Image (cartoon, rainbow, N blue to C red; front, top):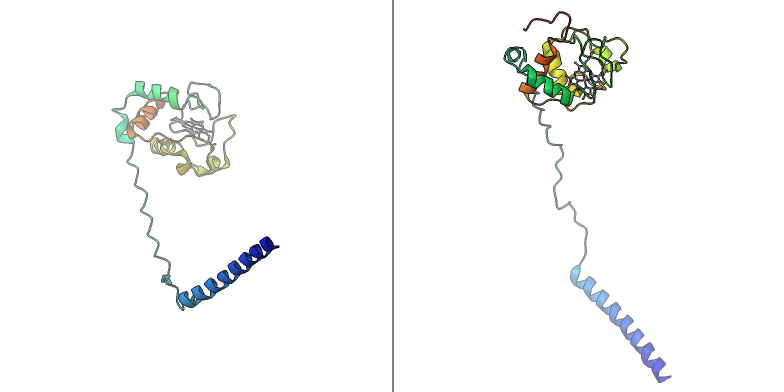
Length: 175
Ligand code: HEC
């Protein structure tokens, strides 16, 4: 019994102590709500910074005469050939055959199923349009199914276009 009393006494003492501490700390700390939020929140959203206009792409035409066709061929085989052939009568692969691509009507190669975005683009493949296409296909034809990151270097694009130009029955003149 003595043990029981001691334990019960301890519990009671602890409970009392907790109550007292609670009261005292409330009295000392005065919790109260702030009338205003401590951090002022701006009423207006910051004015959106106007997006810088996309840098104009320099015309590729002037680069073609001095381009390196052999380097263009090697690049084509490495970067484009997985999806495109470029020989006369060559097969459509993931992408259409590119024989006679310069001056060819867009989305017109027989037997290839183009995306509706490509079909809606319109016009012929000028040197400059090919330049845009292989720089960033998804930017030039939004919704294209040409899943290719693009050739960032102007020299690479000039070389590939210079390689493709003579692959035609009647190659188009250099611009
Ligand atoms: C991952 C596959 C893939 C790669 C790599 C690729 N292409 Fe394509 N390309 C396509 C597809 C698919 C289309 C058809 C796009 C559509 O219908 O939206 C296409 C379309 C084109 C067209 C338009 C053809 C037409 O008849 O209107 C050109 C030009 C072209 N590609 C050039 C290139 C060149 C040059 C390269 C290499 C630098 C390249 N592509 C790399 C898949 C690819």
